[in-house]
Image (cartoon, rainbow, N blue to C red; front, top):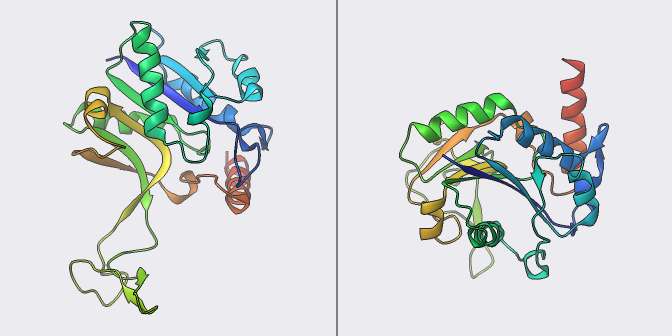
Length: 235
């Protein structure tokens, strides 16, 4: 099965300005994802595509001969309001116009630098041996709609978010999960039939907290630096 490995990396970032080229440890953040993509791609059939409007990121990509930059991402797909769904659609349409067709898509967000080859292999095994539309990396959520989440009423009072069941402690509440932003492995046919990742069959691959850092703000960056130091000290 042919996979499009898509790396979205737009220029703008309000939380951490120019974070894709900012040094995390001894290399730019985007390099962690470039290196990972190069290690897991099957070059006999897969393609790695960088979707960006950032010329500095393109210069870094040029060091990796296997990473394609076949287009500059359009301005309308490079704003804060542009969705990953739209970015994937744009890339698929480009390759389709070149008569290149894929069965699967692997979306790798540069803001998640700590994925491992083992994570990918286990995730891919789940994907191959299930009837899922998408296998996605997750982490356990600390906030739980069965116990610790509240919404504001029209009168301005907090009320517990409505959910099935009544639980007295967090420990007895069912586990809930959130996407950690690291990897999304999905079938193209299912993607073309859905709207904005609204798949019918989604299976999780759970990653631990220390590999689930998704850098969106300065605090996330500090956390990433901490985990990087921890990894380096324990290698």
